[in-house]
Length: 112
Length: 116
Image (cartoon, rainbow over all chains, first blue to last red; front, side, top):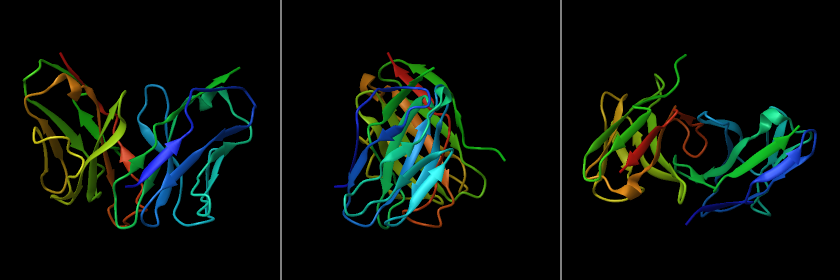
């Protein structure tokens, strides 16, 4: 079956550091890929998505590129802020489906 | 406009009791989803509705779990004879339901269920 694997956290960085959170997937079809974020005390919200190979999703300074050849969708940000501290989830939705398959989540802690 | 709302926000119940969790999706969204978020299992899909029909119930963990949706809007997730392992945050999401695989899902704040 389909699955999503994320790097384990927590990831702790200093403010203005470069961020990468790795995400790889297995899918039987041709999935869309998503990053959702859960800020402390808040609900899940979409951060960015990509629906086909080589697409780049971007939002709030975060980027991720859909790499079909490596089955990856790594999340990057050039300069993180304390306000980026949250749990980040990678997810996929496969061909013909609506449901999301989730990674385990990566907690990000940014220190001033 | 209004987002997805869920009630109650917190529910504490005793083992063996039945509970009902409610979800109000974004107006106009035909697709509605229930997920469960727990420490041991992460985020798990439970059930998906398109209108009032549930084409995918594959994630419901047992026959103690059921869900319905009426009027293409409000949905209720019912857990009968609750067990301690049912303790989790139950999340509802909705989407336009027009684009399989690419719809953006909008999540509610969740209901935290604690079974004593």
